[in-house]
Length: 365
Ligand code: ADP
Ligand code: MG
Image (cartoon, rainbow, N blue to C red; front, side):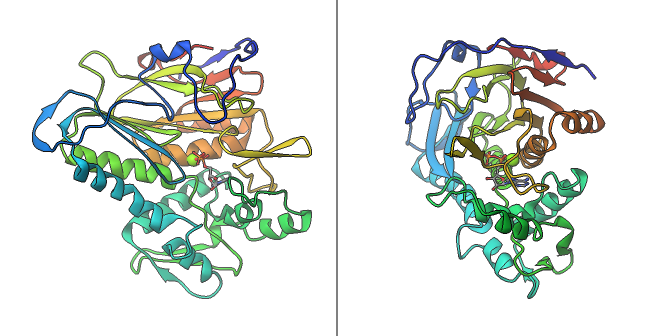
């Protein structure tokens, strides 16, 4: 496998910092898509009889992020088509959110240590995949991290540093081996009271895959689905060219989107995790939303960002989160063992990547 270790000289001072909006930079022209960035017009007339190559775009808020779906070759989408497209991901959200009291995930959590809960096929599939990836990554990715994330509450008004006692208690409730699955009955049981499932590291990928399938079945031939960090690519740009996807520079000092690198892909998903996504500062220290199931605290190692390319956005999502937790050495060993197509970006803005020639991986910053 081809490896590249490239050191990039740290960026000079950023000129404009805007917390509300993401600014464009000169590298934008070199990519078709960077996470969370599109601003095309919206079309609403409906005629599904033929494909059009006029750009059609929908932007909305779901799964706690801005969703941008851009169709480049597709049937004409009307209001109803967009509505149905959004329903696909809203259904995933209402089943899988741990923050909604009425979700099936909340029902599992409320019955921890009490009884198994029968769930939908969708949710069963996601929890089963999450448990498998937890096994594979030796618990770096662990869906029972909910016992910790509900203490930190990062990304909400309640975010704060929990006490060491709370962290210890939370840690004692994190263990993917205590998720008991029954394939025949489709039930999920958390063995111990106080355990809690959080699918925040995988559900977005699952919904991207569901949307990919839904749109493909509707006859969409070319599209980019941007679910804030999960970019799924339907088809390719044209016969010769794959889509170019920008990997964001992991810089939490600015809300400005700076393109760090570009990589090519088609009919697959480019998923990035980073410590710049959601975080807060307390007493001069940063605390972000990827929690180490080993320490109970946000990951604190050399890795600032991890991107993974796979046909399944769900798998890539979980792996990207796991790599952030593993730290440089373990992450590289894991990537090589699995033959993952990935890029890690470190503290000093150097990077490690395993993309082969056809990816045309290029560092831009
Ligand atoms: P994002 O949601 O910003 O794209 P990730 O895919 O990395 O980023 O997912 C982060 C989310 O995953 C957190 O908000 C939390 O819900 C959950 N999470 C945090 N740490 C872990 C972990 N070690 N294993 C599994 N899920 C995690
Ligand atoms: Mg993830």
